[in-house]
Image 1 (tube, rainbow, N blue to C red):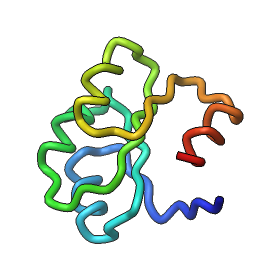
Image 2: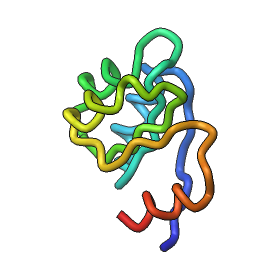
Image 3: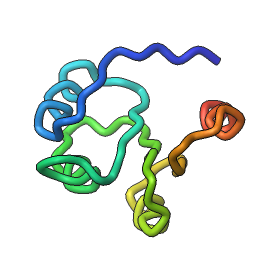
Image 4: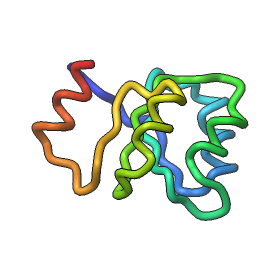
Length: 88
């Protein structure tokens, strides 16, 4: 499967605008970010792509799946684990 990276941002408000404009099929989203966390960012989106959380914190996993994410990757992300996520 091919994944094309069409954007990257670490600032929540700018990322919201990018997602709304580019309308990606999938986003990889960290939970701990400056200014707002990943859950707060998702709550502000009008367009909702598929979401994979990629974070160093395992304590958010249950909430991530409650937010309809398709997977939850712990950093550092291993290639084999990323391949499984992409197959989903």
